[in-house]
Image (tube, rainbow, N blue to C red):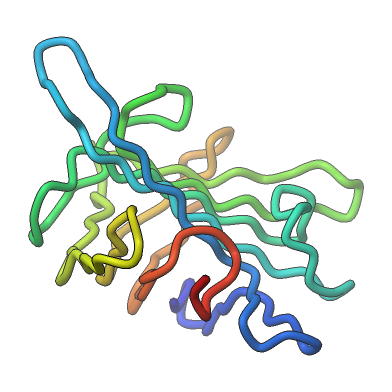
Length: 168
């Protein structure tokens, strides 16, 4: 993806080309009044100290995106908050020199963050469907809304869940 005009990519494990600093989880949830709700949670991280799947959240940069109710290809507006269990959201955390994090969040009242799912990958050998698509929009500093990031050219091709991207 591109953040404020600069390319940003998650870490890649130099020892194992099947592992990278991103992963995807899928869950079929049953929500009152909605019924079955397929939900994808995508995380990605980058850290100059190296790649560690278990420590995404401790990385220099940490992206988390939750896209619920994905039943078919199409556009999904992330108009919820990361504080909600089933709501659509995206956050991007930047570790500061003092070890605290500046957290950028989507804000549907401003420039919305939109995920365009181009394909839901169904493979009979894998129980959970993968997802392919793009995303773009605005993220705003949770403590200072005048501080923002513009996200463009975000893309994902997650045909396997978890951190192993070469299959099972």
